[in-house]
Image 1 (cartoon, rainbow, N blue to C red):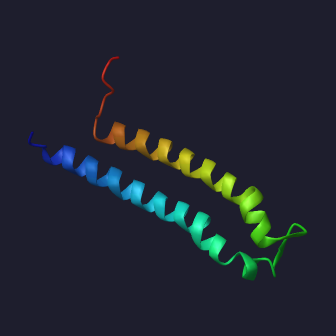
Image 2: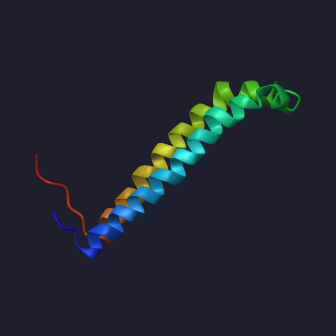
Length: 87
């Protein structure tokens, strides 16, 4: 199946968005976990920062990632005139 230029542009935008959001997810999940001991030397709202990131911050970040994905994909769908198939 050959894709049109518009479809390729849509797919590239989708992949770029997914890649960027996965980088943020990786940073919050693994990079922050790797440096948890160092982060615990800092305080945030009375808690060690490493603890706060994993107890609250990571969950909030995941919800924000989902909201960003939904919002940007809806904009891309409108921009490239992509319609959902009827179920």
